[in-house]
Length: 247
Image (cartoon, rainbow, N blue to C red; front, side, top):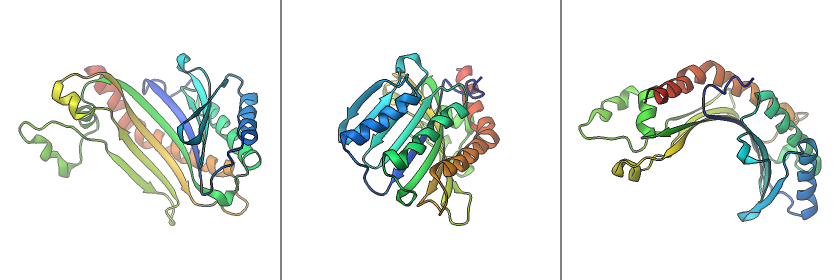
């Protein structure tokens, strides 16, 4: 049972490996990687190209629960939408990272950054900015400005990035992204859009000698879960869910 299913309408766990050098764009290399991912997860059967040389392998989106991975010129990404649990998604990302050194010739020296992301989407018809301000509040220094007569929130997307090591190579970012535009506010015509909360643990730079991508991802997963469970679930996700339920 997904412990995060009750906190948002959709929940997903992604991995991004950003490289310093461009990946090989040969048909053989790209298709071999996709085939190895599909062999492990046969439900990922839709393969297609996008602009700028991106290629995607994914499952059936209509089900609401699906896996995907993508190969871009300088990034390998993997994601699982609405997984049964975090471990299920983590194992998929581990498989992609185990394939990367051999299937894509990616070395630990070639790592620009490695991400482990947990995302939460809330469906809401209304001013996302005002909702976020109501649910989690605004910084005290900004609070008085929000009381200006006739003022309305048109952009409030709080984010915070902090490092957890002395070299600032291991970081975590908490961010809120909304889809409300000035047009929506001006016309009062709001569509049901997704308000997103992201918690991203990131490791910058080449891997240490003897460290594998899987070793690094394990460290990032631990950090991301700690931040979500101890600092975000009760302070950000649950207040947002309550505020939406009360509308």
